[in-house]
Image (cartoon, rainbow, N blue to C red; front, top):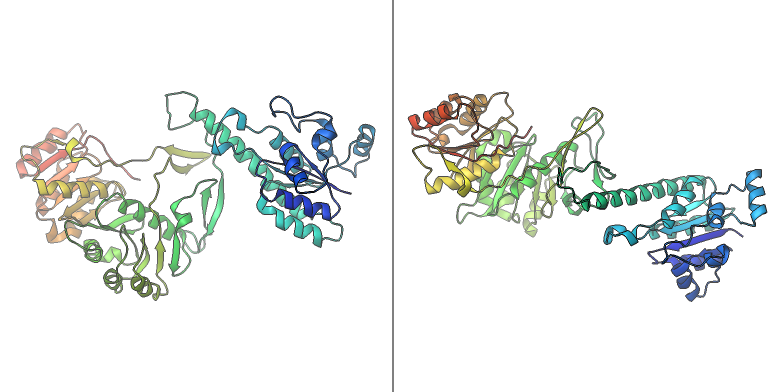
Length: 507
């Protein structure tokens, strides 16, 4: 008669499991509170305390930490030496270990650091050639089904190996949570946002159509015990997402939520190529049209994100433009029907994104880690450095340009007018080329517009390019050794200029 050891914090389904195992001829060996629950259901049990001869002691810190428990879990009944030890000490082998751990993550503290549970889980997982280990109630039904279907009433080697892998992942995550808690409560002030160690555990959450190129495989992974907006997003129509669809949609969705008023962002190759906000009385359809007008050529095949529900009018406006993905918090029923009728358009409904804790990129042998760039936009904190100050209406456009600029690959220049980005240049090795690209894309719309630069102008040539296009005001971080020359150039050309004191590179 095989033995199953049951010791669980989450007791959902445990009495039913014990009864079913007992019905299949198993001996049930539960501990403490688990024994009480199972016995109350009328299942005959042998409490672990009866096996060990010790009750739960030290305020329940020691219950299953005993040789008679761990010898039974770790024994290989096919090994003659193990057989001799089992016989010498009168210990029987344990074929199934069902354990789930104290919920440390729910209320971190010393008393919720499980010791006996992880010890049994690891022992059973080590001996998975002989023992099945179950760490989650969701596995109970499948385990019972397999035991009943097998000729010998045992789990297959493949199942035991799968369960062992999950068990080791469980204890690894548990230890990581404890280390993170100790880091968070260490009282250290230095590099508080950058801990001494990073233990990153992720699960594959979504297969992707392909990577950056069709010959590359790709998937989206999610951190354990973290629900991101992607996990709650609903795809209403269109093909499977690709790597770049996800990457660009993430960029668009984050940028559009930096705006409080109705906003639309269009992203192509991780860079915004169209942005517009409601300047008073504009509906979401008109905001989309204004965003698309920034750079219609680049918007072809782009990602469209809006922070308001999509209306029928917006769906109709989007119709003639080839778009890869549209993402919004919701859709009018008729708008959804219109969009999902387009076979190749991916239509996503999603909640607001949460802030990133860390910004991580791979480097050889490890990761490059930094805290995220918050991009706090507060024109009241900016310093006017020219004789001419921005006009009140220009400040809103300067704030828009500055917000967008922080989402464009450096070196970045963004022109804006009347709540609309009209020219965007970025990703160039020098700032003056970005200024030329932005003004060319803006064309005549640059006249009277404002401009933002994600970092200081190292020379006056960038200001000269903007002024020649008719730009009236500029926001930039300042901080160059030639700031005086740049300020003098702005004064000479009649441009208002403000310094933020903070740059926003994005590589």
